[in-house]
Length: 240
Image (cartoon, rainbow, N blue to C red; front, side, top):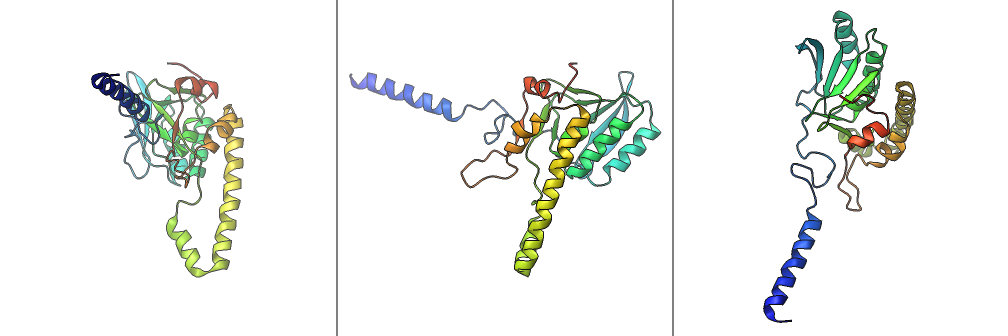
C-alpha cells in the first residue's frame, strides 16, 4: 500500500471512531443521549398555575418546580375553575410526595381532565406523577417525559452536618433515609396501579436510572422515554 492509500485508510478509520464517539443527535445531552441538553422545564422556583383559554379550551399551565404546597394550590385552582379540561406540564421536578398528591388531586377532580406535555416541553422526576394523574394523558411528539430514580439524599448540608455530629447522628439520618425511601417506593408503586400505568415503568426504567453520577464513570442520570415507550408503559393513553 502506497503512502497516499495509507493516509486515506487512516482518515476513514479516524472518521469511524469519531462517529461512534459522538453519536448523539443535535441538541441532545452527550451524558444523557435520550434527553435534550437544555430541557424546557421552566425556571419557576415553585410551580405556577395559570388558567388560559387556548383555541376555545380552558387549559391550566403548570410550570415550575414542585413544592409541598402544590397539591393544595392545585385543588383550589381546579375547584375555582371547573371548566378546566387540560393541564399542560413543564417542570424540573421537586418533592416526590407532593407530585404524587397533586396527581391524585387531578384524578379526583369531577371533570375528565387531560394532562399533556406539549411539544418541546419537559416533565421530569416528580412532575411525572403529576402528569400521570390525568385520566387521559398525552405526550406530544417532541415532548420529553424524563425520568430518574428518586433520591432522598439531595440535601448535602444535612448529610455533612450529621457526619460532623458523630456516628449516632449519621446512623439516625441513614435510618430516616432508608425508611422514607421504602415509603416513597411503596407510594410510587401504589400510585401507578391506581393510575393504570404499568409498574414495569419503575422496574425497567425509573429504578435503574441513577439519580446521581456513579463512580464507575457512568454520567447518565436521566432517561427520556421514546414515543413507543410512553404507550408501552401506558404513560400516555391517548395520541393527539
